[in-house]
Image (cartoon, rainbow, N blue to C red; front, side, top):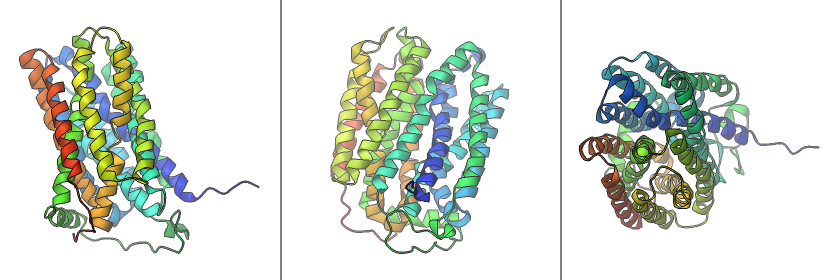
Length: 414
């Protein structure tokens, strides 16, 4: 007789597919920079504006999406967001002017992906699990990273073999394929099925729908913004975004191309980072359940800064052992910051922790967006990305120091 699997694990599995689909859009933009530059003659800074809008809206949407989930439910929000991603990715094929790229990839895809950011995963984890939250958070974060990187070599090959438009259509089809699974498997709360959350020793009632999702998101922002932990978490996570999405996922392929490395090979390096990310992020979730999230966070930023500082000397036309070592180390550290950051938000802000993490994640995307633009400007002006890698490494060192100052002795009133 088989062992019955708790429904929470099936919900987590489908949530993983959702964030994989959303994550696939996050790094594909970096592969579009060179083809768009060649086809339309747009500068990298101009293309970076659309990428920056995408990242900013990705971050700003997350807290409102978390509040909207409390009102409208997990299934409706997830299905709607996937359809929005599909619409944005599909219509990007018709761009002819920079403003159209901003609207279709920047706004539509940005909002859709933002609604399915790690804030969404944190909400699912909070509702369906009372134990193993760190592990599940690490698993879902790893799924997001897998989506961001596992498709990169494939998308790079599609762009080289066919065209960049074929790649965006493929992303639209991926989002459409996941939407029916969301409707079939996801439920808003275990109580909808007469179940307890995984690990709960007694029934947990389903929370009542929260009216005024936007007002609640703003209220939680205003309340948390009066506390020190919020600003420390937002500051460190802004650096996280700047040193990953902002420079690595937006500009690495172009920077490697500057050194003679084929785009497909550069995409393979990013894919290696993504594969290792799965190990690093799940390990981070496991460690978050057992050790100080604050010290874990500081260690991740410090080591990430050291790895970025070495990158300019490793770039070349081929992948040498040093680049492989960088990919492995950076992969272990890349998204390992997410589980301890979510845990600290939960410790500091209690039931509002998922929404507050949405605002912290907004800072992540603002940092990413600024460096996405800034990296393009530096490349256009100086002809090299070297200065950006060094600045990103310095910011990571600062984030490590800020992380050591985070204190969450008790839940803050928000």
